[in-house]
Length: 272
Ligand code: BJW
Ligand code: ZN
Image (cartoon, rainbow, N blue to C red; front, top):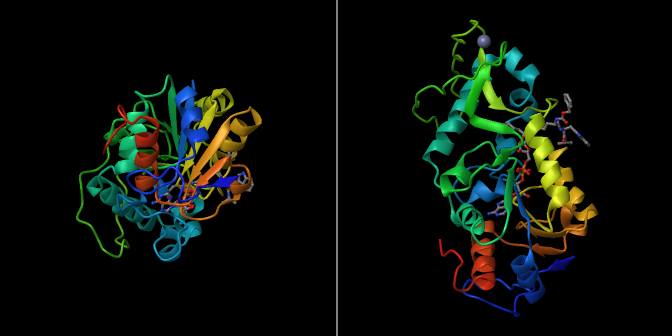
């Protein structure tokens, strides 16, 4: 693994981009971008596990992100997810999301796979994003699975602790639940199958802003590597993927990605 080396190939924002990576990107036929919560951190959406700012620093995952938690206290869980949906609705895509969207027109084929439950990739312009962990914006009935239009906006609660009754399903009278994938739940089969197939097919995979701790999503970069792809990681912190990444950039995605694109595509890259 090569950590990026300040002092070589410096560009506008002082990220060192190795020439071999630039060439690999320029020659790639299928690029996969695999993202986690860190890609939305610069939009003000909290990550899960970051010290001080991560959601799990302040909230207990087991009391909120499992089926058992929902069945135990629906108002607590629904209120927490509505608070987070409001945060996402107020957030805007950042230069990392915009760079990923721009990459689609710079490489022959791009597949975007995200663990994120926000819609910031889509709002930046990415199409056909594979959401492995669902979406805050797609609630559905707990009992019959019927999709439900998200309720209208509610005022934000700074503590994120406001209890709210979940809506009732118009189809069967059941309770509406957040459209996310909780611990112990199966990932959406179609998305996971497509994500795994893309990983096995690509020649370059970017793993951006994920702690690489949650499975089966965390296997995706390894699937790509086993199939011969090169792996680029962008994350300010160390992760378990460090040993398998070909290049690791220890920095914020909103800085490193625009630098990488302007180094690889000086005339056609995005300048978000
Ligand atoms: C920046 C940055 C900047 C900051 N720029 N970077 C194998 C081994 C062990 C356990 C398991 C296993 N297989 C399955 C399991 C169990 C479990 C699991 O993985 N547990 C581990 C935690 C131990 N997995 C599951 O339960 C999954 N389901 C499953 O396996 O089902 C099996 C089944 C099959 C058939 C039938 C039935 C069942 C489901 C996992 C669902 C995960 N759900 C969550 C919550 C979603 C709802 C919600 O939003 O509340 O998804 S958990 C949470 O973690 C969320 C995320 O998508 C996921 C990943 O987190 P992510 O994105 O990596 O965020 P962080 O916070 O961890 O990291 C952020 C990173 O960004 C950090 O590294 C920062 O440094 C970095 N960063 N600023 C770039 N500016
Ligand atoms: Zn229903």
